[in-house]
Length: 220
Image 1 (tube, rainbow, N blue to C red):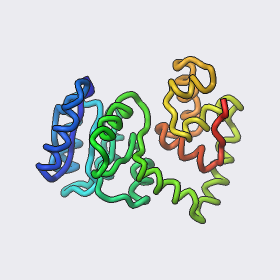
Image 2: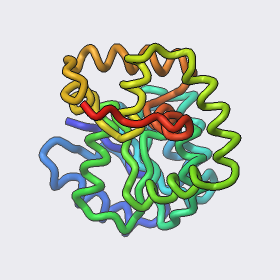
Image 3: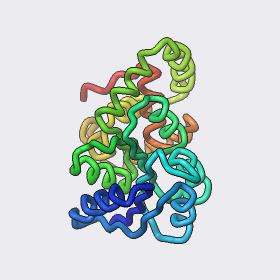
Image 4: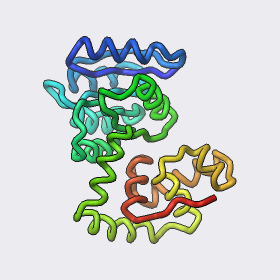
């Protein structure tokens, strides 16, 4: 079972998320929190695989709680949940090591998919959040980021760049393996090596770096 912590200051929202998630036979909501500080403390004392954090919470907001969890409970994969789609929030969440970002008006099945993806060690961005990331990549600041990204990527082998390009496309290890005719385990080894070389905390950061660098996905 995937053990989930739900943090939101609105009881009705928490209840709705609980109802959606527990409709899946492989997900169990084991804890709830009313603010970011309570979420961090709960994650410290409760076995949790995935935490869903609302951005707008009292005492400590979701992005601050995400950063705290990264230090205190790095085993917990964190998804940021919000009604707001500002790209700054998306990029801050990913920069703090978040496993994904989705909006509260996402379809119930999307919420379940996001939790499963995070628990499996994969990244998840809702389509709306992805659009904001793409918009940011197209902004004037993208030129500077692109130069830095290309410099960092230059240290990878050709095969590592291929794998990284597929991370940029959002593929899972299994799908990337199928595209490159590799085993899933081999892709996982490549991903770990890539994250280390690029000094990235997670797959999402590596995926954004791939896009900044302009890497094209393999045609297979």
